[in-house]
Image 1 (cartoon, one colour):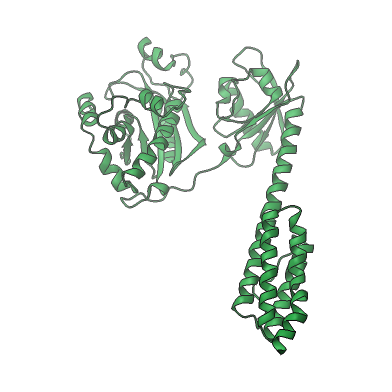
Image 2: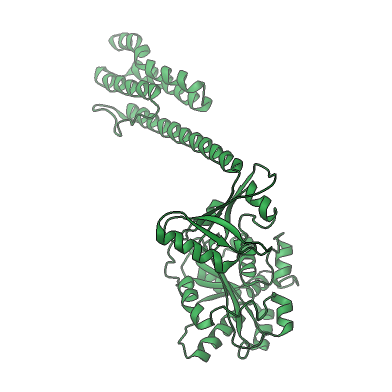
Length: 444
């Protein structure tokens, strides 16, 4: 009877903190209110059955949760009170989880609110605002900027060099970074008149913000893909047991003066880094190359690069160090990537530069190995099969980005086949007879 009297007299008091928490949570988070109400019931039952020592620990847990109900940012004690039995300790842990959920949800609401207000402010500015990655991809454009260059010219993920002159933008960003403050500059535009801009560098090698005046009416809108500023993790050493989820890849493509890797020369190199299924578009490599020979009209008709465009570009030997650093220890991947590697190897041999071919994955071979009866295994066919946009087709970077998208689209098929690591992926691609025969006939 003493235990019953203890439970009858003290259960309401012990549960009061939980009930208070439930009342507070009910207004904002009904699912948490239900959890707190259940905790109150647990307290009442436990208080009915435990002795005096356990009740003291239980009372302190109730006080803790009352405090959390009053102050949602309070940091609760990480361990249950001394003397707490297993049941009271479980209630304490439940309280900790409830508080963590409350704090996380409040922070998410606060972040969304701030982001939304900042977006409205940027959208409403009368100046054009462009945010660029270090490689020149547009990661943010407000309505005024889109008004100046047209809706499609500055979509997030497109190159700012489709609108502005590369040779003007790069030095302006470098000057702002060196000065450590915004600088005024004038940059050329591809539609004619030069543009006065204010340039602010973003940290160390992380892009820049360009602002500029805009005439005429514009819509208060904002488009952004700020994940373009994300950086991939360092490439781990690749071995047969490297899981596909951790596999570092570089999607690579070259544009050349022709299709003979022993004789033809590189005019453009494009590459983008992947880690597992994630594509880090903001780290893309996109370089024009002066080939040192004439570019045939037939080649220009395919990739659009003529001799005037590469007249001031560096030779391949000057681009190679940046390409080698970009690849690092990653697997090089692309559609018929053997051709790209063969032409790079020939360029290095021509210049007397030692070069070791990296591990590689050919998407033609992989797609053929997965579906040997299908005929749509060229890059256009694979893109159509998976509903992928053909943006920038037959440019080096555009084809590299498309190859990255095709690889991601093939990952579910690899999972179905039980292919989970680099060794299994390499073995599967090697089973392609059609691709192997055609590539061997082409000489690479």
